[in-house]
Picture 1 (cartoon, rainbow, N blue to C red):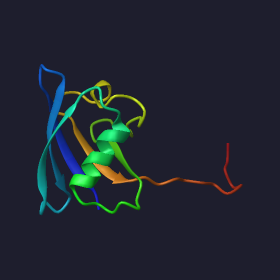
Picture 2: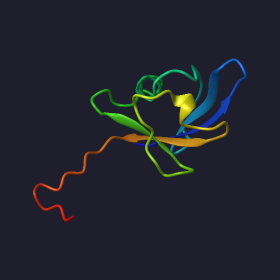
Picture 3: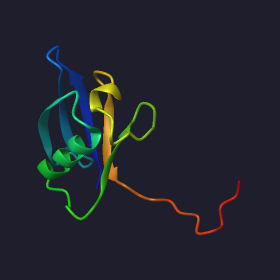
Picture 4: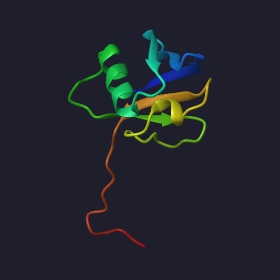
Length: 100
């Protein structure tokens, strides 16, 4: 399950956005401090969306296709009006077969 999120930044340092699941069957408003870590924001969004708690979630900026750094503030990584996706975190391992 993936959740798309559209964001705007208020002058007070609050990041306000709508979070919706990929099917559009659930949409919730979110307001969070722009200084909150991406990890905390992701955990909050996953909880509010009632996404499985045994899954590690991460945010990806749809504009850059890059994953946000979990330790850095969300407001430092996305611009007002950005779109991000909450997605299960996957770990790619090469199991000794990596090239390069």
